[in-house]
Each structure stands twice: as C-alpha cells, then as structure tokens.
Image 1 (cartoon, rainbow, N blue to C red):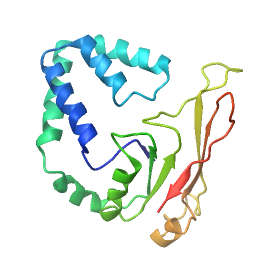
Image 2 (tube, rainbow, N blue to C red; image 1 turned 180 degrees about the horizontal axis):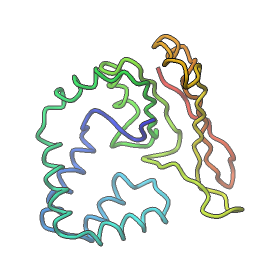
Image 3 (cartoon, helix red, strand yellow; image 1 turned 90 degrees about the vertical axis):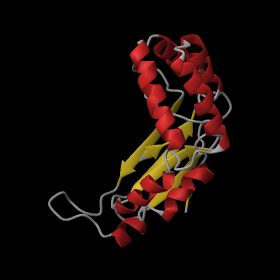
Image 4 (cartoon, one colour; image 1 turned 90 degrees about the horizontal axis):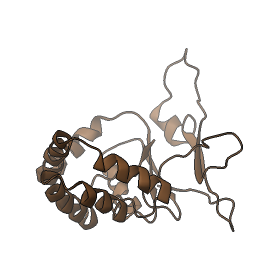
Length: 193
C-alpha cells in the first residue's frame, strides 16, 4: 500500500518544490515549516502541523542542502525513465490518495495504471495528504484510522497467487477508512479501477 503518491509533478507540486528549493538552499527554517504546513500539509490536524514545523526548523544545514539536491533532481529528471522501470514491478500495489490532495491527486495516481500491471486505487474522501493514525493511549480515540486486512488466497508454504487471482480479489486486501468527527462516524474509501 502506497499513500499519497503520484507519478506526475503537477503544477501545484511543481510550485511547492520550486518555492521549497530556494528556502532549502538559503536554510530558511521558519519559512520552510510554514510552506510545508500551508501547502501539502494544509489538511493535516494542527498537532501534526506543529510536529512538522518543529522537525523542519530543527534540521542541520547539511540536511537542507541534501534535500535541495534531491528536489533539484526530481525537478530536472525525465520521469519517463523511472516510470518505464516501474513496469517491472510484479507485486500488487494499492495506491491510496485523499480527494482533497492537490499535490498527489487520485487522478494523477491513476497514471501508474499504464506502467504497473497489478495496481489498484482507492480515494479517501475529505482528506488531503494523510497518515494512518493509531490511538496514543488506551481509551483515546484517533482522529482517523485506516484498516488494511490481508486476505491471503494462499498459505506461506504455497506459492504466490497468480496475477489473475490477485486482480479478481483473491489475495488482495480489503480496506475500510473511518474519519471520526462530531457529526459523522464513518466515511468509506472508494476503490478505483
């Protein structure tokens, strides 16, 4: 399962990366934390935003320069090279994206369909980029939860299922998403493809 990922660099992501690379090169810690939380982290809970900000501003200078190097690689590489390489992936993959995510949108993630043979897609409603949450302590309810249940069509002693068995739903995973709010208890993920 791969969360919040896309093979494309859309205009929103390109703008974020281009703004970020300037801040990384100049080690503008506070501005980087604010950029992260106001863009790709815009739909995250405030607690996560605080942790993101604290982490970003506490990095060493060499870490900013290393990130700037990698971001410049992402912005200048020909994406077709690694997308063609992804055709060799023979493992079933479930891509899960939030429907409010402008940076790695569910529609953009669907482009993996052209390259990866055994992939499926799910969209989590009312979420941007999201993480799987667990309760910190017994008795406390998490803000959101995502359960993934593997239903193997084989035992470890036997061989892997065929691609047709996986795509037919035998050996694939079932998933359910719940967002706990004051008015609604559950919100079902909608599978794509």
